[in-house]
Length: 337
Image 1 (cartoon, helix red, strand yellow):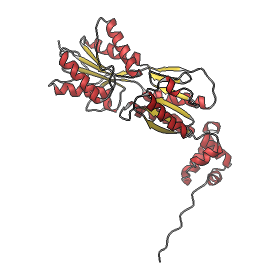
Image 2 (tube, one colour):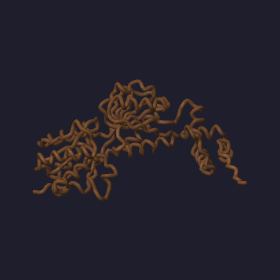
Image 3 (spheres, one colour):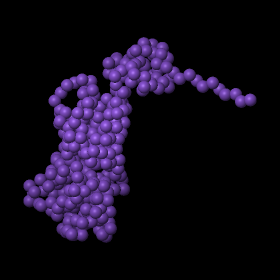
């Protein structure tokens, strides 16, 4: 005959209230809208939650209010490292207000992005963050507060747009290479609003300096393989190139591979600069010079804008630009004389 130990009862909101010395309704308020509770009582409730190991029921919270405390995030490529810091920035703000992020991945294309958004809307999310190329028509009239993160080719008329100032970032990359003395410069670009703005800023600044940029890949994707293929074309057809600016760090990694495959070295033979300041750029092995798009800051600002809309702050759609920062590392030097 076997004996089993009775399972301990799960703590309830009433247990938390008793331990914290507050009412159950105040515990519920801390869980749903902590900003409306004084710091002392808020911390007492959180300490009681931690001590008891209390886990609030999301279903019960949804029934008790008209909100699911869930935000939908649509991206178009899990491989793009930009999304990692964006998500971290979003959660740094949303978690303090009891919100969770539900992620949907969609390959580029108006219908696919709309399908991903519709799937999130079917889950009754309280708001949407679009970090993909939506097409304005595809996401018009979502019925929930919507904020677009990053430059996109289509932005719904009623949505906020919060993005890195990619035009300034592209110009920043050009200024850095020109300042080092480079004049034979290639640029690896791709489809999408962010790539277009980075390209415009870069080539505009080069032309101001009397340098005609060599741009490849405007109609392609921005993966490592795309970066490799575009860099191969530049190095094979224009071997005099002394510097390459890639639309993101992943493409820059492909460029470094193309340089190595041709028996050349970076930065001794060809300098390389990326964009996004991703984990790749920061690695001690690569030490990639990169423009920091501050995607964690973009994410945090997106979250604040979304919360304002959810809380009923009626406003004209905003366009917010976050200033980029250039981080010079070991892949850019002056060209050989």
